[in-house]
Image (cartoon, rainbow, N blue to C red; front, side, top):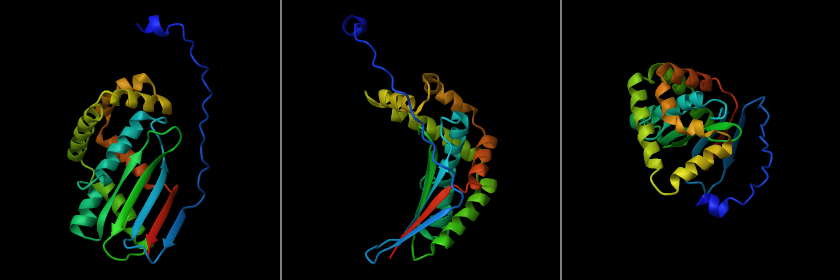
Length: 214
């Protein structure tokens, strides 16, 4: 049927893709905004990072590590600073590597009381280094891989979802082979790979820190 109705339609000319790479920061950048109408202080930091185009395996390992470290209410960051120390009402982060150029890592924190930007940064920087050595365990990785797998199944629930997933992956430069073998690559991720990626991230100084307060 496809050949019958669409076979005579010629393919459109493919436009050349342009991959823009932003220059490397030579120093860290900090932005602070104040306004009397701000009711809740919020701290944010965005790191420039690798993407799935650089390496699917490395990016998967980084993604899983970030989920353990900062992903939601079960993360190490949330347990430490919300449940235990009660410094923040919310804290977390994630890795986004499905991009044509650089990927990025995003962190946020909402303090319960007024805290200086530098103090928040120091607290999180020190804890992240400690958590990578002491908090990232085999048990947590196994659990996160299971969640990742089941989330991927749920994410394809719908008539259009598979097409959207394939379209997004192809648009950023991944191949059909990458998509079809995604879960096989997930199975290859081990604790050593996750810790390696997180340790590399902990040395990353390509970031911008922002703070909004009254």
